[in-house]
Length: 167
Image (cartoon, rainbow, N blue to C red; front, side, top):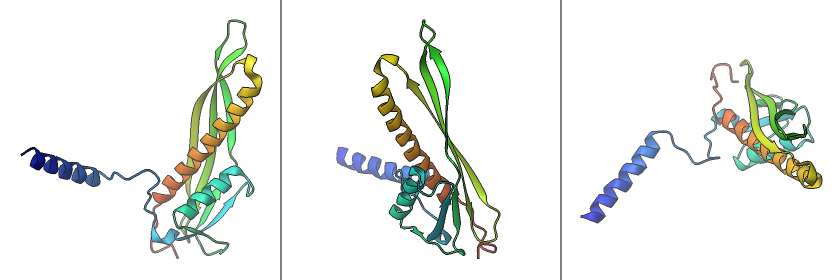
């Protein structure tokens, strides 16, 4: 009896998660028109460009130089920081880091679809550990870029393509 209930519960859980649109992270469904993409960016040698190109390759999307292929544009990425809190001495104790980038996808004659990505993180700044904080900031920035690349892929998978103007 317990085995039968466990089987029914497992079957119900599988049906519930498949019916709600649940997908594993990084398991995107891309429109077939995006099987090949021309990737351009404000900084072709930058870390974000490299990360997006790698994620496209992992998603079996071929990056080509063909002018007729859909075009993914990555704008210049920006890192801003604002003060969140101060030590009693007046020195900054905590910053908020804001990483932002704008991207767009253009398919055929359609108007470009733009995506604004913004990632926020808190950053503690202890002046007694300046060298360690520089390394921590580099690691944090790398994580923010990787998260931005993931969000660009998610936005790309939600691209609306009008079949009449896509060619």
